[in-house]
Amino acid sequence: MTAAAMAVVAVSVLGTSFLSGIFGMAGGLILLGVLLLFMDVVPAMVLFGTIQMGANGWRALLWRSHIQWTLVWRYIIGATAAFFVMRTVAFVPDKALLFIGLGLLPFLAEALPEKYYPDITRPGGPYICGGVIMVLQLIAGAAGHILDMFFQKSGLDRRGIVGTKAVCQTIAHFFRIIYFSSLATAFDAQVPWWAFVGALGLAFTGTSMASYVLERMSDADFRLWSRRIVFGVGTVFLVRGLWLLAETRFA
Image 1 (cartoon, rainbow, N blue to C red):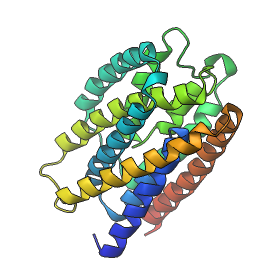
Image 2 (image 1 turned 90 degrees about the horizontal axis):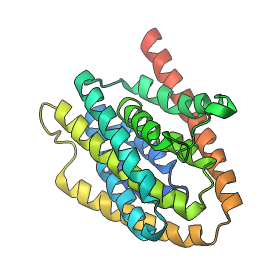
Image 3 (image 1 turned 90 degrees about the vertical axis):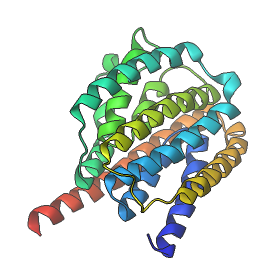
Image 4 (image 1 turned 30 degrees about the horizontal axis):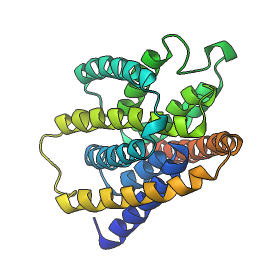
């Protein structure tokens, strides 16, 4: 990776950690897209998972008093079961499929009938959420925007949403690191150890800065901007994926 590319990645880590620190999602989508521009899928997933696990873990610590632990433990059960199923499949998609998946997911969730709309507080909701998010994390690369769908109509306030989602995402990214590390025949040299350390430092900084903004934001504005960001990023990723697919087919 060139110095210019590393600079782009560094700025992206700081900026996306700030964005995710406010809304609890969307930043990861952007960061993964940036990493995939410069890296292969497996090393990008390992680096991305490390950054996101650190950022979400720090976010969970900042909002620990608002975390809904009864939802978290059930989420973990669903996620763990899905992980072991996915590990037997050992599927790594190409970049075009990754971008298309990332772009389509929010629109597919929005198209669901109201009675089937995802809600983590419904009976069985946390188990379903954990299983769905884990599968999407491993196949599509990121699912923070879909996880957000499970919280949008949950009735929790913005602090409870961000804090609880942070724990759920920390667990998901931990499984992601294990999954993609096990698929690599050897650790990829394009990601030196100091890149992980520097990226985590930037992620902590961006997350801490975001907490001041979240404190001053209303719940209504939080939900409104969450939806706008999810669909905006989804559109960009869908276009990017279709472009890559067209390049492959007509090259």
